Each structure stands twice: as C-alpha cells, then as structure tokens.
Length: 257
Image (cartoon, rainbow, N blue to C red; front, side):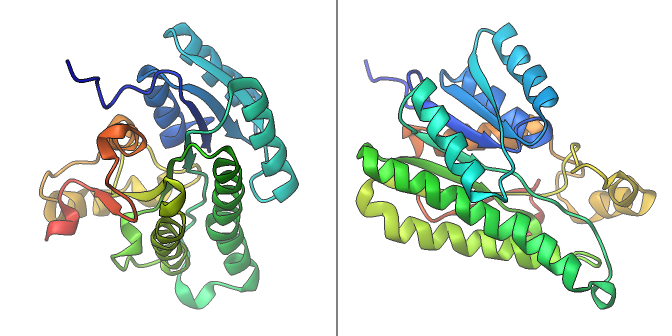
C-alpha cells in the first residue's frame, strides 16, 4: 500500500507569525499532519498559548520568541529549532503587516516599514533557513505568505501590494536557484479571509467590503484560516513534490474573474 503523501510525521516545521491568525492555523495544521513545529513570533505570551493549544490536540510544538527583522534573532531561532527538534524540513514565512494608506500620503517611513517587514525580513528568514537546509543536505519545502494584492490593485494598498509582488518573485527566484538542492519554494496568496491582520478590522469589516465580496468573488464569502492552512500542508508535503516556484491563489475564485 502506498504511503500517505500528506503525512508529515517526523518532520520539523518553522512557522513565523505563528502566535495568531493565519500563522497559528498553519502551525496547527502542520502539527495535525504529524510535524513537530517551532512557533515563531515576537510575543512570548501568545506563543505559549499557541503551543499549549497544539499540545492539547496531541501535537508537539515549541515557542521561539523572535523579531524577524533582526537577522541575529532569526539565526538564533533557527538554530534553537534545529537543536531541539532536528533539521528543518518545512519553513513557513508568514509574518507581515498590511496597513492601508492612500498612495500620495505614504512617506519614506511608511515605505521603509512595509518593505523591511514584508520583504527584507521575509528574505532573511528564507535565506537563513535555506542556508541550513542546504547544509543538512535533505531538501525541504519553504512556503511564503503572499496575497491576492500582489496581482490586483486595491485602493489604499499600493505599498502593500508592491511588497507582496516582491514575495511572489522571491518564491520564483529561490525555487529556481535551490531546486538543485531538493528545496521547493512556493507562495500562497490569500484573498479576503475571516481572519484579518491586527489593526485592519476598521478597513476590512465594512458594508462596502461586504458588498464587494458578494459582487466580485464567485464563492461570495471570505475564506477561513483553515482554508489557507490546508493548502500550506499540501505544499509542505510529498504530495506537492513536483511543485516549486508556484504562487497559489486561495481566494474563492477572485483570480478567475
């Protein structure tokens, strides 16, 4: 009988932005599939709660406090994960910000913050994880969290969309260069979800947005965090062993119209 290609038993996963929202859903889904997971974020308290939740469901996880904009902290977090859980197999680069602001009011500080957190720090995590995966010589899967905003213009999200366009191209470039090492790199591009980034509820939870979702998204609803996490498990698993450099839009059909 063929082994289950979705089974992640014995594999080590490292998930940034894992204290809440999509990152926590990804960590839980990976743990449910059998992986042992390092949950990485800045806030220790939220990580401790997340680890307890995974343990309560029979999974194995550790909490690793880390500011992903600091390369030294990223390296320390990766090295601690390897020391406690074993060589990296799966890395989900999920942290990011998404404040809305009209293009003509974005100043240098806004732009620097967006690009530092959403692009530079994502690159550093992927680069340092890839460095350790290559050294281990066992391949692996890296999944970057992008957005449907990388493809579609959305008023107020010019700098956010630009940052996520960078994530899409990052996935392609890393996939092309690291395929020779057995490392696959892909991105997931969520559309409107029930779980929005912190501080954006006043932007997303409005009658205008609800009307837009009803009009523009074929499935006429938001996605759930679980519906984003499940494809991440797929991309992390052997079921996706011939998929790399792909940006997977998870958006209820928005990309189809």
